Length: 404
Ligand SMILES: *Cc1c(COP(=O)(O)O)cnc(C)c1O
Image (cartoon, rainbow, N blue to C red; front, top):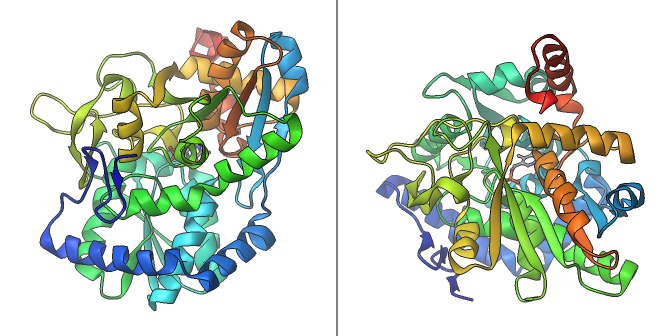
């Protein structure tokens, strides 16, 4: 594997394209992380909280009814939705916050899109008694009102970001600026496998618990490896957490499902692997959606957590080398899958995760009954229920996203 864990380059992707001040802050984190990575005391403490606080291991559930209904491959759901706070994001938030605490830092800042990473960060800050400031686009704040309240309830300060498209990418800019200025006493807890080194590496490591568990669980349940791994890709943390531990298992095919939104026109989606080009955004090199002048494009997705104009460097590397495939799923396909999973399995998945479920609905019938698909169910859909209701009501009136 051509990746350099000291510089954070995955082939030509990753790296640190940042100001000297920010580079100093990042190098400090990278050095500390290399120390702590092999530290048995740290790993034990992390394992303790993952087990006792998050509730790991999360089940790998055989969705029998859905599999039978589709008449093809067996579908297994990795239930990250059952984690404390309702998504995979807590795995990473906990890892980084425990590290920051050991570094002696008292103030944590973070960006959030859907609000899930903000809630996860606010949660671990409450748990570990640290000051917490969350940057969030004002558009996302309106879409995810309840998560804003949750963060405040957990003792965090939520700072609205009114710049640009008022979504995740603008919140990232604001958080990076704060970090560059205040790194002496502040730790930036980044929520996805993106950003400059060492974040993609750290986030991958902290999320790899998903794939490590899934491999053990599928072998235990079936005695064989899965044929396909499916996961939605915003920045790519839940997907890389599932994929990376299977990297060497060449018989396992990996497919990342991207937010195809309303279609391939610029501004209507956030499918960075499908429609993006290799470039530098937010301090790292990756496939990203940029316009002719190199400016970051506006993005759209039904799922706020997927609304990001790039994919992580390790995914970029998997894409460039063909190790994984990335396909767009439209808003309406994701919304349909959201409904199907609820009806067939009694599981209300997040809109984000529903992108991965949507592809399982397409793929399973084309495979045989002894083949296996593992779907990463990255989060639960309680946060999306109110929006789903509005969509269905609108659909009754005019025929909107839900009718397709
Ligand atoms: C944030 C989020 C995602 C997208 O983030 P990745 O880093 O791409 O995993 C996916 N699913 C849920 C439930 C989320 O909250």
